Amino acid sequence: MILEHALLPVIPGRERAFEEAFAQARPLIEAAHGCRGVQLHRSVETPNEYVLLVQWDTIADHTDGFRGSPAYAQWRELLHHFYDPFPVVEHFVEVR
Image 1 (spheres, one colour):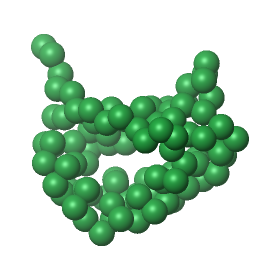
Image 2 (image 1 turned 180 degrees about the vertical axis):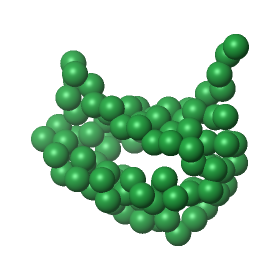
Image 3 (image 1 turned 90 degrees about the vertical axis):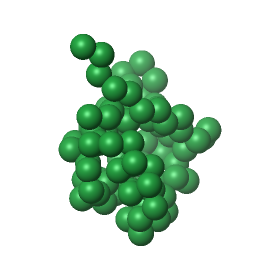
Image 4 (image 1 turned 60 degrees about the vertical axis):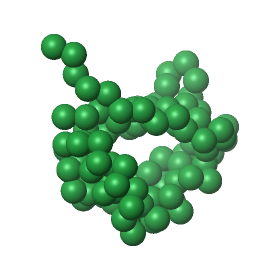
C-alpha cells in the first residue's frame, strides 16, 4: 500500500469554501481505481492548512490512473484555485 501525503495551504479566509468544495470532490478520488481511503485533516495551530492522506494500491493508481482521468480534471477545477502555494505531494510506504 502507498500513502499519499499532501500538505494543502489554503488561502486564508477561504477555508469554509474549500471544505465545501472538497466535500464535492471527495467522491471523485474515492471512486478512483486503487483508492483505499481518503482523510482530510485541518491544522489546529494553522487553520488554513490541511493535510490530505490517501491510501492507494500503487503509485501508478494515483499518478497515472487518477491524475490521467477525467475525474482529476473535475478535482482540479473544484480545488486547485484554493491553494497558495501549490501543495507538495509525496508518497510513502510503511516501514515494518
